[in-house]
View 1: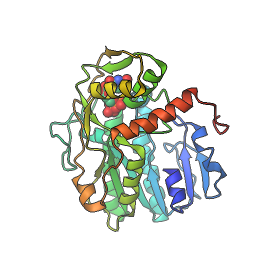
View 2 (view 1 turned 90 degrees about the vertical axis):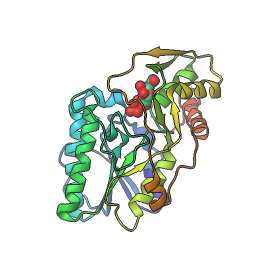
View 3 (view 1 turned 30 degrees about the vertical axis):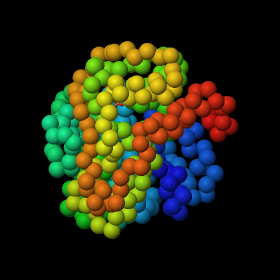
View 4 (view 1 turned 135 degrees about the horizontal axis):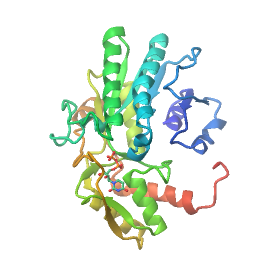
Length: 305
Ligand code: UDP
């Protein structure tokens, strides 16, 4: 995202607490005079002297094991973090973007999920810190827009993967690729018949830019994701086949409240932003396998710390 903004001519100030991301991902960017980075947790009050035209709030761990490791902090990141950034946007009269999530639909009864579906979410389960945190953040964004006239853009992001994920991220695409590259068993949770729709990160970022730059703010959150739906077993088979790995597929218990199906209805983004994903799962997996192969086994790049 930072790379893309710099390419498009913006000056970028990144803010990260580095709880789940790695500093070495920024090494190349730090040479760019238009880029700087502040280590800060948006749960805490922000430095008052910051001046921005646009703010993108992408803060929050998105992988279930990571967001469940400290659920109270996850909830605070979504709610207090959103409040702090909305106040910053208000002081600066800045346009502000919120990374919301398909998790607001919970375990959906409507398939595929259009933006108008209100969702089926457990308020007190192990996923709730993330789902309800993101739902509350959507509420805050729309209340700030109605109350203060703030220009807000809210994207509901469906499962995303790509370069620069951590090998221990815990989400399914990186888990399977890392397991297959290491020749370890691929851990399919439950039957593997549950479905997800996987979007390559570069496609998603293009969607962010189009949503942020659209002349008029949509009156509701906008789904951004790849509508090609796969079962988790299909994904496992694809990854093992592509890597030509000796790994076997094993089954592990299905996590509590794991959604059974998920697929975005992206009609709004298609019709109003002219956006749709261009990179299919086979291409996206090839790029991501290449990335992890170099990260795990390649010659260490000097920018990696
Ligand atoms: N999953 C799996 N094996 C793994 C990690 C995840 O079978 O090693 C399953 C998980 O139970 C879920 C799907 O893959 O049904 C997507 O999980 P992920 O954590 O990537 O994202 P989310 O559940 O938030 O959609």
